[in-house]
Length: 164
Image 1: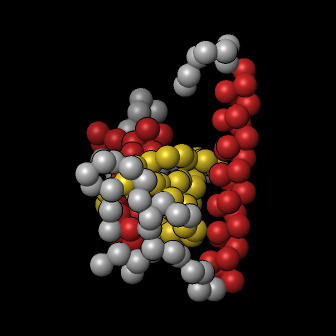
Image 2: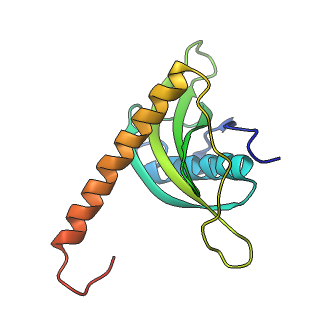
């Protein structure tokens, strides 16, 4: 049922196929996990097929190693008419250790699409439930505003007539 689930977690072990030549998980693999978790969270909230519209504020804070227990936690923090802002934290832990560590975090925007035409379609409104929810919504909006400004600057640098 849409409008119910606003937090979603993936948990798994980092595998040898996920790592680069330095023995650490590829940033691309982490981005894939983030996108998959955010997609699942956006669909769970909206009840619709969703697509990634933007990713901003990506920070690779600490490496993830083979065998680490990985937790990808996605949280809806803001809705527009058809869009949803989600904050994703990726945490990792050596299973022999007690504490986990923040590995990566970012903000994503997803857009819900209707089935027949693939056009943006309304999503249930998210109403913050706590002061933390309101702070996270403000943070997500700031990150995505910076992303929009950078995108506009890059667009302004392109010769006339060239699209993305």
